[in-house]
Length: 259
Image (spheres, rainbow, N blue to C red):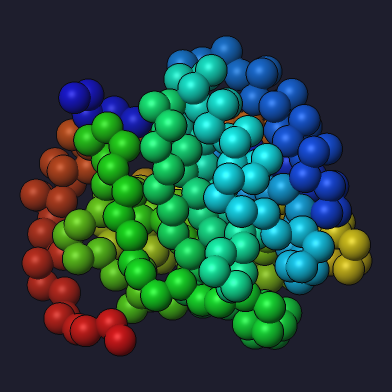
């Protein structure tokens, strides 16, 4: 098992409530990649934009977008990840799905629903913290608003990379940039933040600020403002473990129970 993880983050515009159009556009962007990638990540609600029209837009785990993700993972021989609206057992979830080349699916349901955007009125919050393994990397998946809650993000010495997919508005960009670095420093982990660009149907603007931060809080690579772009980085597990062994912060963290 190699100790490197080569990831690609796609910062893009999203067509409002048009899954087929968004799938087509993301595929066009992904086809521009010439590097060998282990994991590609799309923004939050990549199929629809941050819509609350769950009855109209939500799909099932057997729906077209999930099938597209599975097919894409198999053809490209990489893991495909991003969040979308999922209908299940009468509830709706903002679900961060990982599709593996062998057809396996892993997912995390967004815990912290954005009440100021009335997300809590339409979606059910997830209750389970998930760790997803890709190669030698243990990954903590999060969705947008989760980033503001450090207790939930606390590394229990069980993850190496935190991935947050978002529709994070332009007026709060400084919070986004600061919190990504803070989560990396306090948890001694790589952090990848994937955000969209453009304007949605509610008139909300997004600048992007997609980036990858190392465990010391240094930005390794960042996308340009307002521009559709794919950024990539090769993450080293050996380098991460060396830093953790030389500067042992995590064993001194406070214990807690997350209810």
